[in-house]
Length: 214
Image 1: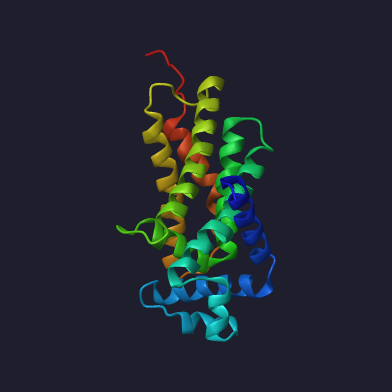
Image 2 (image 1 turned 90 degrees about the horizontal axis):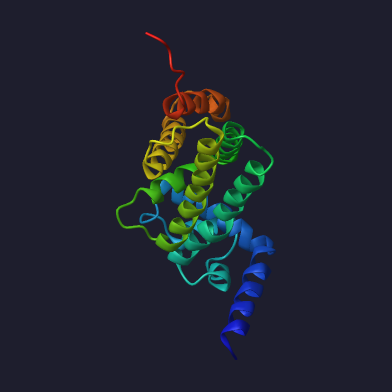
């Protein structure tokens, strides 16, 4: 068996699992348990109970608790992030693309507060259990932001004298802070409603300024 057949078999296995109702129920349950109790305090038994399956059923789909978390990011979270690209591609101008990205990001996390909390907590851990999967998600998101910034620079709507790495961190940091505040807030409000105001703030901070005569 060569490397190509191994890769194909792995993809088929993932597809088969992802189409399985119990697989998805376990992932949904894991997101809730990990978000509520924390990854290290959670147990496979608690996830099984939340999913409504026997403990042994978990091991038909996952090796251990770490494998469950890895699948949350490699399958469930990636599904969300793949939609960001689709949404951005619908717009033409840099500002509209940025609004599409941020609005869809906030909308998706607004639908699943546990997933939003889990993603933020795991992303900012010093030692990350799902390191490879989180890196992949982060790279995909930062690549989209980079494309938007470069487009804006070509349009003349975003300054060209800024370090693009710093700009990317500025944008993603602002988005994460808005989500973090919403997750921790005792007030009930629509997260996605702040998208337009946030984009205006970002663009005015990194946008070109009119030259005015003194």
